[in-house]
Image (cartoon, one colour):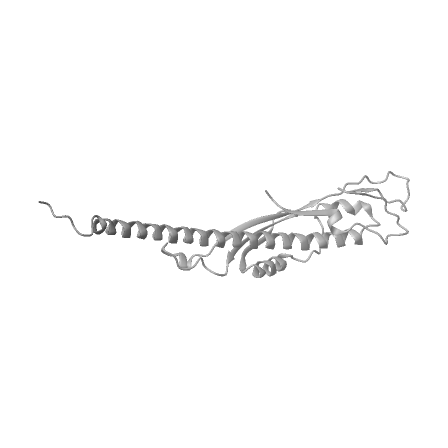
Length: 199
């Protein structure tokens, strides 16, 4: 006669149960590590985007200021809209500020051409300890490009029209008829230029 264990199959199932629980815990920690890395990467991308946009917006504001300085000389307008203006102050300082506000620091900031900024950042904090070896010293990096896009066009007045006529400035959302005798209302920087991230 075969004697059955008073515990039935429970004794045999216990090691399987332990193995399954251990496997599930491992998967949970693995997903947590992946989530930490993704969050770190997203934070880096947010910092890069903000830094690039800040630098481009600063240059946009300077270009708008230069346009106001030469508003009475429309022959110089196109140079401003092309970004071909001497005397602009470097704008990467704004990129450093915005990266710091997003817990990162700028590794690279450069003006690409005349109307775009390329920025690369690295997070200040590593991914952190996890079951994946080396993550405690792994920092997320990201890059972004912000573009300054002129929004306005104009036609220079023909010969013989005199120096008291300014061309109509046709911008994205409005036509501006500028009066040389009354320049109290002029387009804002965002009327003249759009700043956006490159796709």
